[in-house]
Image 1 (cartoon, protein in one colour):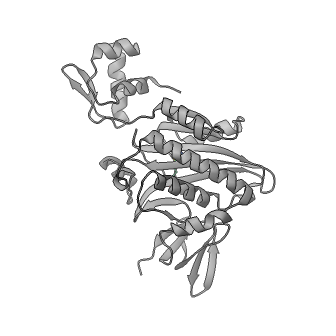
Image 2 (cartoon, protein in one colour):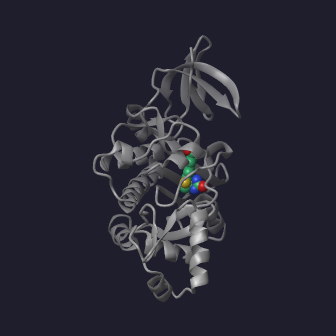
Image 3 (cartoon, protein in one colour):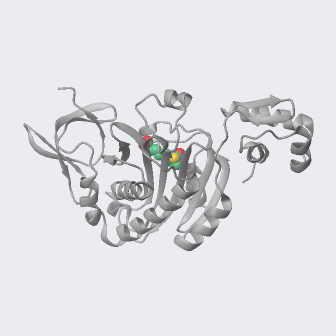
Amino acid sequence: MGTARFSLLRTLADGEVHSEERIERTLNFSPVEVSKLIGELETLGLRVLKRKSGYCLEDRVELYDANLLAERLERESPELRLDVLDECTSTNTALAERARAGAVHGTVLVCEHQSAGRGRRGNAWVSAIGASVTFSVLWRFSQGAGTLAGLSLAIAVAVAKALERLGVRDVCVKWPNDLFCGERKLGGILIETTGDAAGSSAAIVGVGINMRLGASVSERIGRPATDVVTNCKAVPSRSAVLVELLASIVSTLERFSREGFAPFRQAWLERHAWQGRRVVLSQADRRVAEGEVVGITEDGALELASERGIRRFHSGELSLSLE
Ligand code: BTN
């Protein structure tokens, strides 16, 4: 869905000065509309400067290249049905609505700007326009939701491998499905499933990757975070990142639906940030265990060793122990 303010943003995205007269003529906006839309862009966190000869953005913005996306997806992931939105609240929320209305297997929603991006455990997912890659994939499984344990870990491996192929250094995974570079978070995965434990099921696989974090976004995230730009010599475009991620995720989803998590376990362990470290596991913000990370099981459960022996956990949040 194209919005008027994004039509203006597309014109200004290159960071060059564009005359008012040309903007009004090419976009068919009145002067009053242009100044209203500029105000809207500023509320989205962009700075629009008024120059003698027209308007420009303080910093250029990298938007998706629709032609490149269509062409490369057609070639590399023809099974996907891609829809690129200018704006939505959250691609997971929007895709869940479409899934309830019958959207087909393989529908992908990509969005330039999420106004209410969601993270795990009710957290917000913060990103700025042109500075992250955020999308969701609808995947329908013939088996029940009970068989999807470990899916989020398999997707973390798919994302890590795609980022490595794009030249991002030192990508690692943190249980259950965070993407880290060193001790800083690079991206996250939010999987929401529907269906019976036994019948068929569906998953909305939401992925958010930081491409470039400005100071204000880093501040709003409030936790150590990093981005692709910092961890990559030849920075790929957002479109190239999206295409690579989708291809990797699709092949993982296909294999996972046949074989479950087991074939992805070794690749996950090879990238495990906190293997052997002493950690605290919390559930619903309550500390429930502390111990040394032994590894993960064939269905993605975390194994922790403590004086009480080895215990397995299927959900929770990890932090490094201060001891
Ligand atoms: C996390 O680490 O907490 C998970 C973050 C997941 C963010 C992505 S961005 C695309 C999709 N839409 C959302 O609202 N969330 C996911």
